[in-house]
Image (cartoon, rainbow, N blue to C red; front, side, top):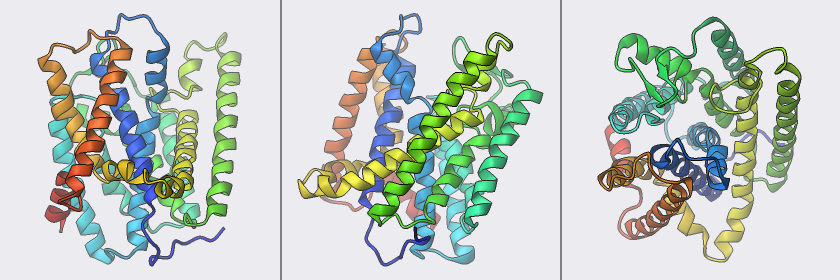
Amino acid sequence: MTTTNPPAKTRLEGIDLARFLALAGMVVVNFSIVLTDPENAPDGWSIFAEGLQGRSAALFVMLAGLGLGLGLAAKKETGANFITVHYKRAAILLGLGLLNMLIFEADIIHFYAFYFAFGVWCVRWSKGQLITGMITLMLTFSIMILTLNYDAGWDWATNTYDGFWTPEGFIRNLFFNGWHPVIPWLAFFLWGILLTRFDLYSRKTILILAAIHGVLFVEISFLSFWLIEYFTPLEADAAYLFGTTPIPPMPLYTLAAGSLAFVTIAFCLLIAPVLKKIGLLGWFTRPGRQSLTLYAAHIYLGMEAMALFGWMQNQSAKTAIIASIIFCITAIIYAWVWSKYFKIGPLEALLRNLSR
């Protein structure tokens, strides 16, 4: 496998397709959180939504690291200018994310800002350094959860966090026990950068990487199941320590979610030429290129509209998923219309103009 992506090659449209899938998955998860009545009995719809928790977001973060690495490879910015531009973007994302927090406490954008702030210093690391960084983040979190109080600030019955707007609570939430804490979630961002060290234009390379990540996902899933079965009689928290659920994000979760994220990316890279040939690709890549705009829209427009109708916390999981599908279809239509007049989305354009 070659280790660089030639900057002269065309845009990887499969990445935009993967961004749309990540966005769609996050909409399903978030709508389910705010709409579904917590007293409802589990069913197939709720199990599907819960299965996406932590997976769609991990894909979203990995794609961010992938995009940063590809951007540097294409030599869009270099040196100090590269760092300055992305620090400005991080500051803008932080502001947008904190505004989102006023409406939706599970916001990822303000975490996203810090992934960029730290990741910009890692984008030139070697493959070995990136892997070491990922392992260090996972091990650090394991030490933290064994020595610190992971429940601090949380009311798990209502999924609300007390003290977020205080310096201590903000830092604790950001780095340790928030929905997507920098430790260890930055590992997904570094994983995305690591992928740019391989030739993602090569079908052979994609298939090899997909096979490696697929095997890793299966092995981690079986290992998690075995460890939980073995240690549960000895340790009540075995399901949390050895599980692959995002709360808390233990190493087996990070490895499982990260490997599954790349399998999804590989699928998108491989299927994109087929979809393009039959004229369907553009319907998904257009909204994929506006993932920031549409992420904000699903909070400011989607959730606010549902709050006005009084639908919050009193619907079925099926209703939440149907609402998600309606939003995604609307997003596809909007992106098609918008692309007739503009090259990039409104928030993407604002982010680009303010950072440069």
